[in-house]
Structure formats: structure tokens, C-alpha cells
Image 1 (cartoon, rainbow, N blue to C red):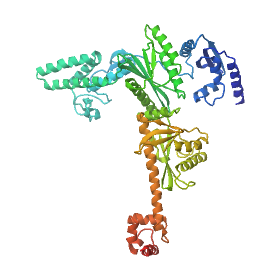
Image 2: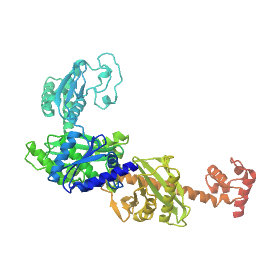
Image 3: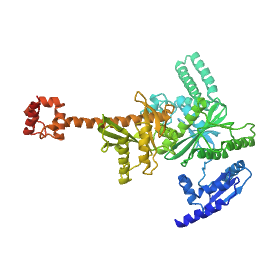
Image 4: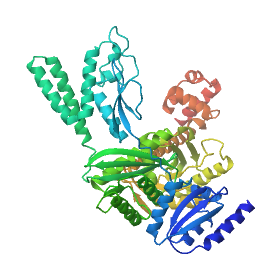
Length: 618
């Protein structure tokens, strides 16, 4: 440890000797491998930051610094030249700690398996396997969507079942019953009829939907003239199916003819960037990339764009992004120069839409990124999107995997209790729920009660670290059922333990519905963030339900204590047995001694004591 500290001091001393000029720095390990390349407006200031205090460094930066043995640098004339050189060197050396994207945009084919009963699928390479290949195409999305549409419109088989004509072989699957497959697996579809569907599907794929509509219209009219009404009806249904698909495709359109839309979603598995590419106003391709987690989203977003367009030949006039990014002006200049190198005559603009069609496209792009993250983590895309949106709203470095929420419940300051509910990956984790009876606060003091509960909760963690999924696990976020007063009362308590857990409140309106998120000193509007609003509302309703239920239980026990438990020989256990048997205190009062004595757990003396007690009251 001491040796490494000395090394860091030595590196910092070397960094402080660097010039205050723009350039590129190259970090290397003990084996002289390049592990990171960065650019700087002032080399001395930027490089020396790495070898100072690591308190504010993200984990990835700390890891990189721990492996640095020495560094080189290259001075350039401007910050823009530094950006260009950085992109070139990263592309050449692919350092371990830079964002690296694989350029796997190979060719794609439409594969038609040999007869009988051919299947139409997507293929990444052309094999000598007797199948027919149509292509190549550059966009995998275009190929996959075209194949899916052809199979759906012409009701072709997409399963792995054996297909032949003759005796019934299989029961058709759900696709047949919802009109997506003609069910050749049943053995009831002739090969000739199936080949007619395949031929029409291939015409649709090769000639396009408009040309196919014209051909099908002609064939339908011809069949009607020949009195082949069943055939005409089949062709009519296929025309309607193609028209329906065309209407659906028009939904993903853009008034900006040529642009890329870039959005990200965060999750436990890292950050996923989604790219929508529009040409002629239509969505023509989409890509996604998962990179390691990053706490500084503007920096990560800027680095991703540099890496992404280093791999692309063309740059559109507009790049639409979902948030702030570092060095936006430099990026626009670099992208413009790259576009001009490929013959373009336009200036590239990076925009961050706040409303309208463009904002909707960004949200759609972000939703798809959340789906990708969800697949890697095993949670639903809806939950992943909600957690990502909540993290952005609250300024968290990552989506909160575990959220704890607290609520106080009492009646006029009596039966003072609290409930703690836990949400993990956006869903209730009921095994981790906990109840608290308030011990140190007398009367109706919600702030004092909440301070007591959070103190006890944090003390329980100190005593049971890592033991279970209840108190032994710290939350990533604490939400209090209350406003900024609750946050101001509780946040110092939580902060005093030094774990850096963010604390916010959930504010209700006059109708007891979630209205905003409270922080120490203000509020954050939440209604416009639909996914986050739904999640927070669910948490607030659940913690309120849980704490109220516990409070009613305690109040009910106290009610029993003021009646039956005042009878000599009757404790809480017997009181509960009697209430369970008779249903109410009134029914117990009206029961005979024999009826009371017959209750399991009762004795005759106890029954006589109850009868005497109520007789004395009367």
C-alpha cells in the first residue's frame, strides 16, 4: 500500500510539471500497455486530477488509476485538435478503460430453407446449405422486421415443428388461433397451397409492399371474375394485412428527414445506449450498445458519441440526444468536419428536445434502451424505465435497485407505530418489510417518530451487516411519506452514519394522491414523468397501507385490553380466543357460563369470572 502511495505521489509530481496547453494524455501500465487515452484543454490541470484525492472519482476511474505506472502526452494546437487526435488514437489502440464499441455492422440476408414447406428467416452469413439467400442488406433491423412482417402477413410457420401433408400430426399452437400461422404442422395444408404463400411472401420482400399491393389487387379482381371467391377472399385478407402493417410503420416517423436519435438507460448491468437512425423521415435502422457504468452522464454521453461516429462512415445533419453532454460545441465541429470529408455540405447540430415530436422520439429510444437493460438484469422493461427515470429526476448516479419507504401512523398521538416497505428492482419485496412501535416519542410528533425509526433502522444495519435481506442490507434510496419537513428532520440522522444514502419525501395533494418529491428545502414536480410517477405513487400507497394496517392491529389489541383483559384470569391470548369464537365483545357479554367454558383454552372459573364481571357492570 505504501509503495503504491509513493507511486501516486511521483505521478502527481510529474503531472504538475505538464504544460497548461491542450493535448492528449496516454496512460500506461507496468507492461507498457496503453490502458486509457484522454484529451485535455490544459494537460496539467486534467492529468493531475487523477493523482489527487480519489474521493470524487467514479469506481472505473479509481480502477484505472490503480493500474497506471507511467503516462505520455502529446501537445496540440487547440482543444479541437486534441479531440481529433484522441478519437484517432482510441480507434488505433482500443484502450481497456475507454468506452469501446464493436463495429459489428456486417451484412445480413433473408434465408429461404429448401422445400418442402420452406421457412423464411434472417441469416448473418451466406452458407452452402441448399437454401436460397436474398441480399445482402446492411441493416439487421430492416431484415428482421421484413422477415417478421412477411411471415405474419402470409401466415408462414416460424416454429421448429416438422411440416408435411397427410395425417394430422400436431395440435396447432396459439399463433394459428390468432391468425399468424396457417398451421402446416397439423398435416392439413397442401404443399402447393403453402408454396403459393411462400412465393407471395418473397414477392413482398423483394418488390416491396406497394408493388405487392398492386399485384395482389390484380389477382384478387381476376379471381373474382373467375368466380374463385375463396381465393379472392384470401387475397383480400392479405391486402388488408399489408395495409395494416403500413399504417403501423407510419407511427415511427420523423419530420426531420435525416437524423440519429441517441438515448441511454442505466441499470445494475451498466449503461445501454440506443441509436435510432432516420432517413427520409422513416426509421431505417436501430442499434444498441451496453457499456460499463458511469457516474458522470454528460461525460459518458460525449465519449459514446465520439466512439460511435468514429466507426461510422456517414454523419446526419442532426444528432438528437436525451441530455447534456460534455464538449458539445467541439463535438459539433468534429462531426461537421467528418461529414464534409464524406462529401456533405451541412453543419451538424446536436439538439436536446424538451417537448414535441422530437422529445417523444427520444423517449421511445430511451424506452428501448431500458428494455435491453431489463433483459440483462431479469426485470421488466417497464420497471427498468421507471427506475432510470426516477434516478434522472432525483439526480442519482444510478437507478436505485433497493428502495426503502417509511410512514408514521397514530390516532391523536396514541398507538404510535411506523411501517417500512422495501421495493427491489421496482417491485415490492415483502419478506423485507418491517414494523416499528415508537418507544421514545410521546404524543403526536411525526418528525421525532421518524427520527427514532431511522436511527433504529441504521443501528440494526450496524449490528447485522450482510446477514439477511432485511435490516442487513442498505437501501440505495429512502423515501419518506411526508414533505420537506420530514426530510429536514431525518436526513441528518441518515447522513451521520456516513453511507451516503439519498433521502427524499413523497408529497400528497388535498386528495391524498402523490403530487411531488420533497427534498431538503424544496420540491421536484413529478407528474410529467409518467413512469417515475407511477412507481412513486405505488410505493407511497403501499407504505401507507402497511403502516395503517399495523396501527389498526395495535389499536384493536388496546381495545381488547380495556375490556376482556380487565377480567381476572383473562389475558390477551384468552381474549383473542374468545373474540375469534364469538365475533365481538357484545357476544361474549351475552354468552352463558357453559358457552364460555366450552371455548378452547377456557376454564369454568374463568368463564364464571367473565360472567361476574359483566354482571357487575350492569
